[in-house]
Image (tube, rainbow, N blue to C red; front, side, top):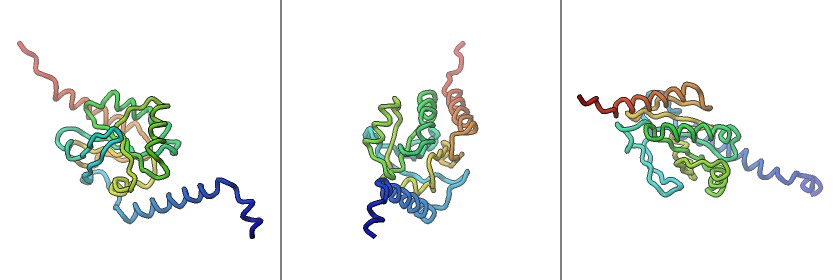
Length: 186
């Protein structure tokens, strides 16, 4: 018995903890929240960003659509997509509120800051340490994108960034820009 334990690979405990974390996250989310679908009212929430700012979803109702991206620093797809999210934030951030939601599993503020510093990212970000927000939105994997229209309803959900997601964000930004234009003075 002792001999088997000595031959166990060093990283296997970490992998086991990670696998168990994923299983528990998936189970908790399956039980904790029915999957929200397009047209459902988005659950309200209030969080504090890593920059210390308060983000309250209800503050944007009737004013501005919201784009939530659930992610993690250890998620390879999330890393690949982060420049895309930064680009959307840079281009449409005045018209569409963007919030990066780190799911908080096997992650830390230090990991997030290091990842952002290396990539030059400056997105409003929260870490969902208890998994409350992740659970309320029925997120079972990362990355996951949720678009909430200005009426506070889920408008689109997707696992990976898609052309449809980009088109909706662009359309919302254009609508807001048209509404903000002043009539020509004669």
